[in-house]
Length: 360
Ligand code: KG4
Ligand code: ZN
Image (cartoon, rainbow, N blue to C red; front, top):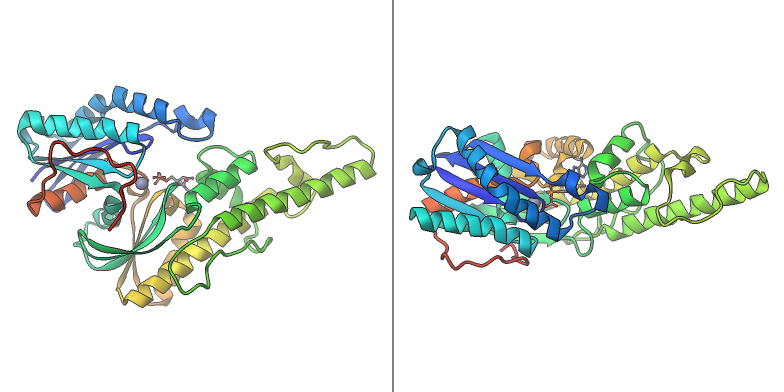
């Protein structure tokens, strides 16, 4: 069964074709990162306008790359939530219209549920029960997945998502957007033990997360550094930095140790410790053989390395989505759509976008 998948929940316009397996034949992603970069975050009006401009081309490219024609497509899947309402509407309406016009079965897909299957698509393996860590800019959650469509959310963030913490810390430091890759780059030569940032909820018995404390600790640490910097420049009467800027500038680090890379490495280590610790604890509690990971933050090299080491130590198999399948993409939408359509599930053509759709 050839399934066309469409994703437009946030700032990526994407279309993909899967064949039986499911096996990804094409996965075209048009990123809007450059468009939103000047604003330091996604601007919903701009995002939806660009989805509208791009959707036709992206779907056409996905069909061409897969080497199939529209006539060969046997089912359509599109993200119906969660996400930005005005963005979701573009892909969902396109998908439903196509299915209606072509008399094809249609299924609306929960974006978060699709993240659960992307590591399996990457590995090309048959699905097995697992604990799945989803870490993105909007979500951080641990899910016990017994089978496709049968899952329980074990825990999630009670405040900021892990990616959101990376983005906010990058903004504080005057690094670029999106913040995760920038912080990772800056952390490369840093000492992860330089600053003992808090590991929110790491030792709590539940599987929830909290990342706002780490972000605030970074802010306070920077303010302290700024005070020290102002005091020392007043002492030397050389007219150094004189005012508190809303974005604490990285030039502070030229005056004091630890360095910017030490700060980034220490922040990243605190986030990674919590993600790895909680994922392993959940896998042991659920007695599963597999831990899987997806979402934008799963592109982070330190997270990937340390999760691999921890899983090895506990005899757990780790499946990580390839980087292209970690971030938002229609391959995972088409893949989950394939499972659901093949099981006979269908959505009504009146299905609406559900910005706050939950998992489970
Ligand atoms: O899954 P995603 O592409 O979009 C959603 O949020 O749904 O994730 C984007 C998030 C952003 O917060 C970004 O900063 C973070 O993933 N991210 C990373 C890395 N690459 C992307 N965080 C840490 N390290 C990275 N290498
Ligand atoms: Zn996502």
